[in-house]
Image (tube, rainbow, N blue to C red; front, side, top):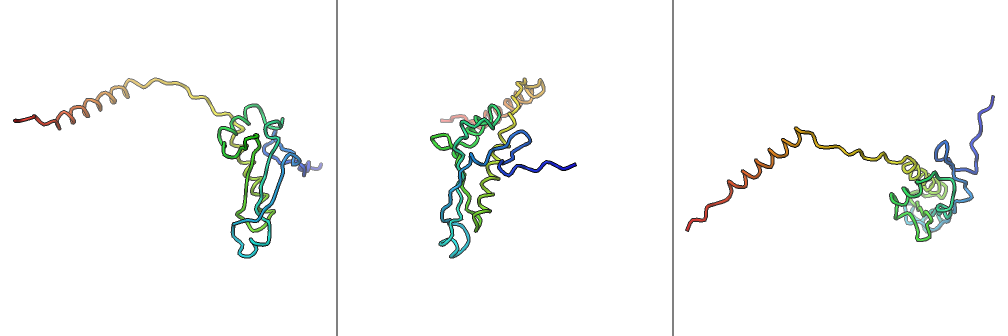
Amino acid sequence: MTTPQPDANLLRVSRRVAIPLEELEFSYARSGGPGGQNVNKVASKTHLRWRTATTSVVLPLGTLDRLKSSYPSRFTNEGDILLVAQTHRDQERNRQECLDKLVTMIRQCLQAPTPRKKTKPTWGSQLRRMDAKRRNSAKKEGRRGGGQD
């Protein structure tokens, strides 16, 4: 029995979510990161652009909205996701860092946040709050000096 091989044309985010690599565009430029003279010669800075992020059917419902609200600076006016990596000296490691950033962002937004359950303060906490207010008021009342003429 053979195990299924991972598809080389997909970026796996989770068991259910995989982004086709054809949807991702990479461009390269000269980096300002470490590398000495290597920086002046090699285009190692990597830009990842996911143009079809808004039209892609890969992401589950609501995930794109959570991405936009969690990472507004990563989205362009057209709705593309733009990521940049320039910490490494070579293109491939920066490319992998961009992919890792994208996977991390999407994984954080896949799970819908649990709605907050409204609760009432307990009777004891209400008593403690009122007692603290009385003590604070008494403390400030004691600071008042009588205006003696």
